[in-house]
Structure formats: structure tokens, C-alpha cells
Length: 212
Picture 1: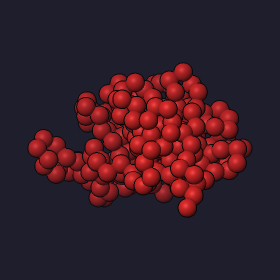
Picture 2: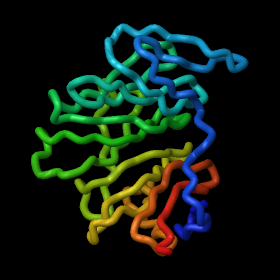
Picture 3: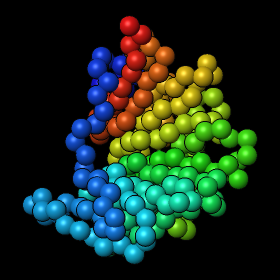
Picture 4: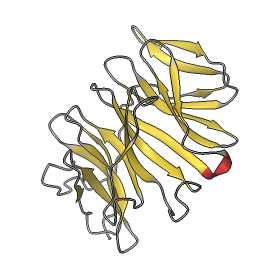
């Protein structure tokens, strides 16, 4: 567990085990849990695979669809409609959504080599459920505002966690603050660490190399 101070307390690198939604890629259906845990199928019209990653209390679901042209972040609204964040064309573009909070903000990554030819990695980004008409917001990194970073979790205070490339070329767990700064959460003594989720109290879970 990573407390608000940023010190990593948990030695084992256990990722989040309690998925809010069973993420099954079952072409041409989406499998979801409804009501008392009954597994149901939601038919979709796109001929590609889908992976569902998170759901909020409003029933809004985020994830990605995987097609031959790359990965595109997928957003399922509570009424069953859908929207896809398309950040580029063909095989040069990729995006995914990892988590969504109860204020309709979703986080993930955006990578577009056509729009950002000098970018070698993904950019952590935040979206709103109205992002069809609302622009994405880049969260920055430990290296630069356009640096390599990923966003994996967000709480209802809109604090985001994930990981970022460092100036040394390693990856560190980070907290993306509401006011725009990126906080390095350090490691357990190894080179790399990763944050995967954050709760309402600000407790963070993830994994880290321990250097042993």
C-alpha cells in the first residue's frame, strides 16, 4: 500500500485483485455482470474484440476495443450507448481507458505517432464521459509535460495514479495531483514501480521491484 506520503509499504507486488467487472473478450459479445451476479451478454455491432476494465456506480463502463488498426479507448455510457476515442489513423495510433470514477472522469493512455512524431511512449490522459465533445487532458510525467506515462486508477477526488518514465530511463509509480503536479512515489529499493489504483482515502496499491 502506498500512503499519501508516497512511501511504499507493501513488499509484495500484488496488483488489484477485485475487478469491478469481469473482463471477458468473447467475440462478438461483451460479457457483463448484472443484478445479483448473473452473467449476461451484451451484443455489439463492431467486428472486433473488446476488453472491459472498470465500471462506476452510474453503470458507466470503460475499456478498449482491439482492432487491426490499433487499440482505441472504449467508453460505454450508462444508457448502453457507446463512444470510441479515436486519436489517430491506422496502426500509428493507440489508446485505452483503465478506470472511471463517480464524477464521470476516466483515465488511460493516448499514443499517436502521427500527431506526436517525437513521442516514443504513451501519454497519461484524463477524459470525461462527454469526451465526444470534450477534449482529453494530458496529465504529464516525471520528465516533461509530454513525457511517457500511463494512468491506471482515479478516485472520486479526481486524484490519478499510474507510472511514468524517469530521467534515468526506469519507471516509477506516480500520483497525478489535481493541481497538475506529478509526484514520484519511489520504489522498494529496485529500479521500477507501478501504481494501479487509489481509494477515497488516498491509499494506493501497485507493485515494485525490491532490489534484492
